[in-house]
Amino acid sequence: MEKILFVASESVPFIKTGGLADVVGSLPKYFDKEKYDVRVMLPKYMCMKDEWKEKLTYCTHFYMDLNWRTQYVGILELEYDGITFYFIDNEYYFNGFAPYGDMYSDIEKFAFFSKAVLSALPLIDFRPDILHCHDWQSGLVPVYLDNFRYGNEFYRGIKTIMTIHNLKFQGTWDTKRVMDITGLPRYYFAPDKLEAYKDANYLKGGIVYADRITTVSSSYAEEIKTPFYGEKLDGLMNARANSLSGIVNGIDYEDYDPADDPHIEKNYTVDNFRKEKVKNKTALQKELGLEADHRVMMIGVVSRLTDQKGFDLISYVMDELCQDAVQLVVLGTGEEQYENMFRHYAWKYSDKVSANIFYSEPMSHKVYASCDAFLMPSLFEPCGLSQLMSLRYGTVPIVRETGGLKDTVEPYNEFEKTGTGFSFMNYNAHEMLGTVRYAERIYYDKKRDWNKIVERGMQKDFSWKNSAKQYEELYESILC
Ligand code: ADP
Ligand code: GLC
Image (tube, rainbow, N blue to C red; front, side, top):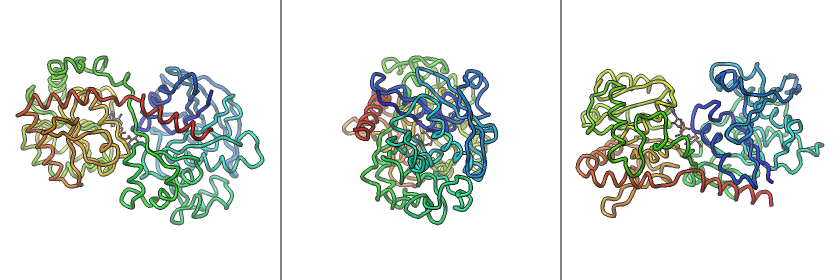
């Protein structure tokens, strides 16, 4: 039995700010249980819902040095859906109303977390063969492991994988302060190790020291080797190209299932969506105060409202788009400029635009189920899960051809009658608008073809089945 420990800063159902949590919480369930014991280690955030905190059981605690500081490390445990989750407890670091705060504190918080994860291993009766680290918050794990290996037999032979969910976030800070926080020897703070452009960079450390690096789609694995997408680490990505691969994300087909989703008005399947799906649209129109018209094309957006997601394009052509026979339902939180932009248009076109500036899992399911199309014109997109959720719910994605969007949405070809969505190439607002309008024409004038696009999308399999196999192969290749 191979033992794998996921190390991450968020996971459903405990704490989520984005797709990382979906991946960490669902992927472990899809490994071959005869061959792999996959567990997960997370911080125990104060902001986790009480319903979860109450269920955790205490394992043990100890005190750990973080350079000159001595800190409490508690370990708690919970088995959920057949997977063991460990939680690292420290009320000083993991307080606050959200998992992440300002970078200054987060840098110390996740140095603590990474060292605590390694220090906890001898006490939990689970010595992993592989530590599978996710994003910059666990980037120091492979670095500390390198350091721990000297003089400690327990850590020798443990392998590491660094999975990049988003290269934009690297966890960088002034080298002197990071030296002071981590207590790592000066040796690690060099340009071929932790240092990047004079600062200390956690993700870079993880990438340099991990045995293998993965990211969440093949296209993004290629893109990050170029200056445009490489976030100044494209040189490093090229240097480690032999150890870098892309494995596309899946989604949890049980949590996201239009046939059996408790959050939506009317359940439906690929066989009856033509009649049943629209009932979700009319219910949502009523709930959100949009004009009640089952024929109008409803376009959805469920997203963190950041520049990554292409909202500058939407903002640029919003007035033009609102002249069309469409409704736009937005669910998201994030940068104030985008929140206010959508609030403004919801005020200006109140029967057409609905701005829901909050976070709600049930509402997200309603949007995926109710809309006809889903707009995701990202500037860059390592994988993207929202378009996969849309496909699962028969909601046709309209995307920019980048990263995982390119790998998962096949553009409609009206001559060959193929494709599951619509896409455009350049980061250009009118190119996007042109594509949305093309989709409108198919929706209104060629309903039969539109429904075939929906059907093909719903028939695609983006469950974790295939991707979990690829991770298994990767694990095997490291361990043999
Ligand atoms: P990213 O991880 O970059 O934010 P993904 O598409 O991979 O993008 O994943 C986003 C996840 O977050 C999806 O599960 C999506 O449904 C969810 N999500 C984003 N914003 C909200 C919101 N306001 N309310 C509920 N779920 C949201
Ligand atoms: C990141 C990316 C997103 C990806 C998610 C899960 O947040 O922005 O594209 O789907 O991680 O891997």
